[in-house]
Length: 212
Image (cartoon, rainbow, N blue to C red; front, side, top):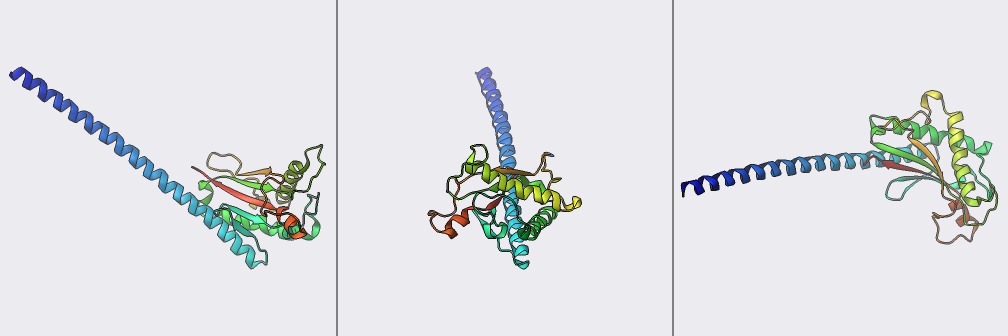
């Protein structure tokens, strides 16, 4: 009988030790999750701050951009860059505005440790829905990509080396900025019939993604 009691006590102790280890592991996971949530919330706040400050500073210079899509995109309307149908170059009369946008982006991203919370910033080109057969048959896909490349290349050439967006790296030491084109696949207007509706879709979006 005493032998059975000893076995029972040993089994109970072993179970208690196992439960304590499981509880410690669970608490460690909870603590880790809390940290990850805190970092994610901080990153979301940094992104919103960057976009809001950029829009506010540009507004002071008379340049009206739009913060949209759940506070993740800085939309540059076509009237600021002057993309005509089937055109992608930044014309001389729009370069001052393009310069200011790049300059302000560099300033607001570089403040404090904000860049540590960012993964990639996409310079996204977009077109209206009218068919375009240029760029070796790549049509609006090619046109939208060249619009983004054109703005990025202008920033790379025009902004001072010290304030270059090209040299910005994320936490993994990879280039922070990337360029992409979406053709007519992400319109901002349901209808594209009037010149105003068509022009609204010839735009550049600056999309900020955060580290997760």
